[in-house]
Image (cartoon, rainbow, N blue to C red; front, side, top):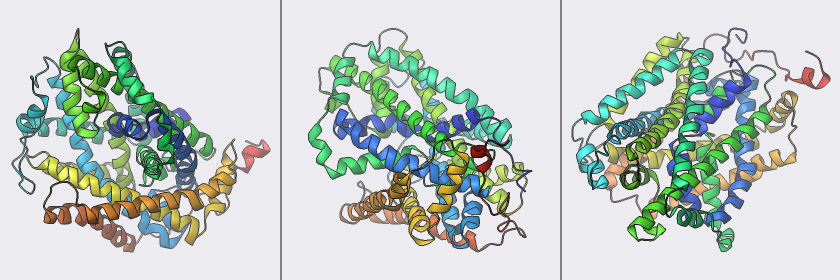
Length: 512
C-alpha cells in the first residue's frame, strides 16, 4: 500500500503546498485588523507565544499522525486508535462545508479583479457590492442565482478540480509552485506601492504602536491563539492528509517551523500593506484610522475598492493585483481543503482518483451554487460563523484532548517525529499539547457558546441561525460518526505501512 502511495516530489513542493494551505483569505483581511484591535505592536508578543505553544506543536502533531500512518485523516486516526476515526470524518465534513462557501468568496475576488479595470464599482463601492453585484435579499430568501457570481465560481471550481485531478505531484505540487511565488510577487508589489502613498505612515503607526496594557487582557491572548489556530490550517484534516504524502525521511519538526514562520511572515506583510493603504484612505478623507479599519468582507470589497479608486496612477492595475492576490491565496487553500475529503472517500470506498474528484469535488461545486444567490451572503455569513466556532475550533479541541488525555499517544508520536527530524522535540511540545492548547481551545469554545446563547449572532432570525448555524455544525459531527461506522476495504484500516515500529533511526545513525 505504502509503495503505491503518491508522494511529494521535493521537500520544497510539500512546503509550498503547506504554506499555500495556510496562507488564505484570512491572512490578508483578518490578521491586520485583529492585530490593530488587540494592542497593535504589543499583540505580536501573545501572537508569537501562541505560535510556539499551539501553532507549531499542533502542526508537528498532525504531521506525525499523517506521516506515521500514511492515510487520509480518517484512516490515519483509525490506525492511531480504532475509536479515533470519527474525529477524522468530522474534520472531513467540516472541510466539505468550508469548501462549499470559501469558493464563492474566491469567485467574488475574481469578479472584482475584472471590475478593477475602470473601477466599475463607481463612487459607492458598498452599494455596488451588496445591491448591484450580490443583489442581497432578506435572510431565508434565496433571491435567484447571480450570474456575475456563478460564472467566476464555475471557473474557480474548474481550475481547482483540474489541479486535484492531476494528483499530488503532478497536480497540487505543480500548481503551488506557480501559485505561491506568484502570490508573493504580486503582494510585494502591492505593499511597496502602499508604503509610498501619502498617509501610509499614519496607518503603519496605528498598526505597530504598542498598547502594552493590552498584554494583561485575557481576550487579547485568546485572539492571538484564535488567529494562529485558524490561519495555519490545523485541526481540520488538511495537515494530516498532506503529511501522509511525505517521503519516509521527511523532516517533520523542521517543516513545521518553516511553515509556521512563513505563514506568520506573510501575515506581517499583509498587515503592512493593508494598514499603509488604510492610512492613505484616512488621510485623504480627513478621518481617523479607526473610522476606516475593518476586517473581512467589508475590508476587501468595500474599503479596498474605495482605496483603489483614489490611488494616483494606474489604479486599475493595483486593483487587479490586490484581488488577483486574493484569488491566488484562496485557490491554494481551496485545493488543500478539498483534497481532505477526496482522499478520505478515495480510500474508504476504493475509488479512482478522478472518480473521487468528480463525485466529491463536483458535489461541493453544486452546493456552492446555493451561495451564488441573492440570499447567499447571509447564508455564508452564518455558516462561516458557526463552522469556525463550533466546527473547526471544537474538532481541534476534541482531537487534542483525545490524543493527549484519553488515548495518550503523544509519547509515540513524539518518538516518531524525533526519529525523522533534525530538531528533536522537548518537553515544551508535550506541555503545549497536553495543557496549554486544550485549555485555550476549551476556553475559546466555552466563550463562544456563552456569546451565542446570550447574544444571538447578528440580526438574523433565530430559526435561520438554528437551521444554518447550529444545524450544519451539528450535521458535520453526525456525518463524522455515521461515516466511521462504514467498513474499510479488507485489512486497510489495520495495515500500517512500514510495520509497527517507528521510522527514522537510520537518519540518526547515518545509514541510508
